[in-house]
Amino acid sequence: MSTRIAFLKGHGTENDFVIVPDPENSLDLPPAAVAALCDRRAGIGGDGLLHVVRSAAHPEAAGMAAEAEWFMDYRNGDGSVAEMCGNGVRVFARYLQRAGHVTEGDLTVATRGGVKSVHLAKNGDVTVGMGRALLPGGEVTVRVGERSWPATHVNMGNPHAVAFVEDLAHAGDLRTAPPVGPDGAYPDGVNVEFVVDRGPRHVALRVHERGSGETRSCGTGACAVAVAAARRDAADPSATGTPATYTVDVPGGTLVITERSDGEIEMTGPAVIVAEGEIDPAWLENAVR
Ligand SMILES: N[C@@H](CCC[C@H](N)C(=O)O)C(=O)O
Image (cartoon, rainbow, N blue to C red; front, side, top):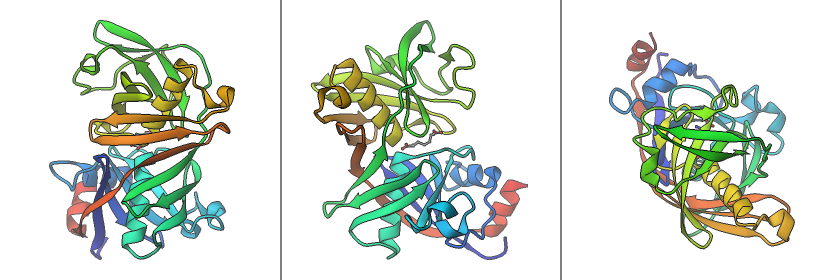
């Protein structure tokens, strides 16, 4: 890597990302490079990285190029690849707007979880069509120390285990991933949400994200929580025929999630770009050695 590499930093409800624009997919970003960039002490710092590539230039997205010009090549902070990142899509759209690639209003973004519809509103909010949740059923259990809770498995393109708890403090310090049983239930790892009620159709969560640790927000996690809460509250829109909207407080802000009666889920929240600069290529080369 001999030329300087541009980056931006952004967040959605404090789920923060290093953004690396690379329209023609010419950068080599192995897991070690992503982990170095996301390192909060030795790097730029972020829960994850948004590699911004034209769909036509990326082998995983070329098939979506007719529907979405831009591909969000999302990576977790440890360098691993994930199928989807809800907050990431909002921040990605905000970047496209700032760079002049799109304007306020409707656009599409290609992700590993398929093409997502996005609306950039005048008030700064960004709404993402997150698709449908899958609830494969089966019992899973989340454990922290001596406590354990039954959890709902919700797939939002990526896997989530949602546990309703009495107190968010019971999740502990979340420095390590809480064990989710039975063994082998999630061979590729899982995002774990701890949830309490705050009022009617109003919940709060803490989350431990696969590949990132505890984060201040998780968009797919907030959707998984809203879906699990609607089933618990006998408000499943596909059964009642009525959309269900939940306000989901996360440590970094608030997201509003609506599940329609056809199962389609929309998530609304803010997305902010906070800085931009250049990565020193010599530092990056050294960091991945
Ligand atoms: N923060 C994201 C989810 C990112 C991916 C997740 N860590 C995984 O590995 O599935 C969001 O906002 O959805």
